[in-house]
Length: 251
Image (cartoon, rainbow, N blue to C red; front, side):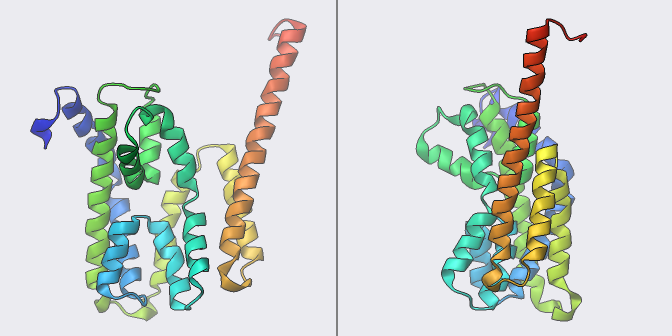
């Protein structure tokens, strides 16, 4: 495959793989715990492997497992998965300027492979909007590395799940595995506000039926994040107006 890439795409692809390498241990442990949780759930082994391959969203997979075990209505399962993955709408919208020139099937494929860590690493590289040689290859270098390490660890966890006892607290381990990913995503004040609001709302509504505290907390977090961004924008807009009106930063 590497030999088929151009002289520009080949080093960009390898650069993406190298950039993703430091996250292998964290992603492998997260995928392993997620796989064990799926293997210990009500899913059969083929169903668990199918979920890993098709859904490819660890947080959503972990979120719906208790709902499936409780035999809650399918609409609540689908709603929960959709709400947990709402952040990918924002991620995809942010990537539109970079890949809008591609065909729809190709963009959908990119969307399937998109992930939290991939998005953060891609944004940190500071690519300019529009076509740029090597940019898509760089994306694929991260994406394929992420997908392979996730599926490998997840399927290993599914296969080994029969050797783990329920009393070992795997649900707690899954939650702990998500914490480093969540903390690494807090990069500004708006994100921190959204996380705090989501935690408070989810705790207050923990006794609601159908696990409704989860989608409500996500909606509250989105609103809080938008309000925080708006307040920040208005603040700087006022500062700029003050500078322009009074004619100098020194004032």
